[in-house]
Length: 276
Image (cartoon, rainbow, N blue to C red):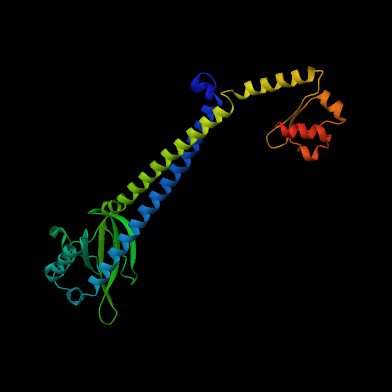
């Protein structure tokens, strides 16, 4: 893939940086998308519950119950109550219907006395909330049965909040989450760049192939020497023990062996320790 994109394989430092940035983008992008969806769903649910609370309050209004139960003409006091509720709550609509689905209140007075576009679902006595499309567009809706004092269902109260309102409430939180994800990405890229720079400095700018060639050349030189070569690092671990040194010591020392466990002659061990 790298050859197709760049024409030749990028250097190790570049590959490392690209890999780290890709992982950061995938993780942060996926996390942001998931969080944004959760925030949207939460906002919709909150506004569904808001619509449900208003519908319940309207269904308990005695004026609304009495006028629907009496079969009065659509509009009138029921329309006035619904309009007042809409003004106080900012809802998209408050629609009251009888048990035949005839509108007694609606934001559009021309639709009063006409049958609703979606069949009443609360006439069975159960409440419901959902995201639906109606004559006023997409909205978070709640439907509540309208009951008389003796418990008889005589109609339905349907309330709704414009879906864009619910999503608009979630927008600031989504923007904050996006800013956080963007900041985290910048910090991650900066950290990856620093790590890549350190890796390049520690390898002296050499590529893996160059390091492998250098190691092979070193091994060839050590094997060709007639003198014994024994090297240790600053932590007192063996790093090099060529064949000549192994013959002189009587056994080879594997890289990483500590001087204390190497069984070296005391004089040799002291010399190696003093010159670390």
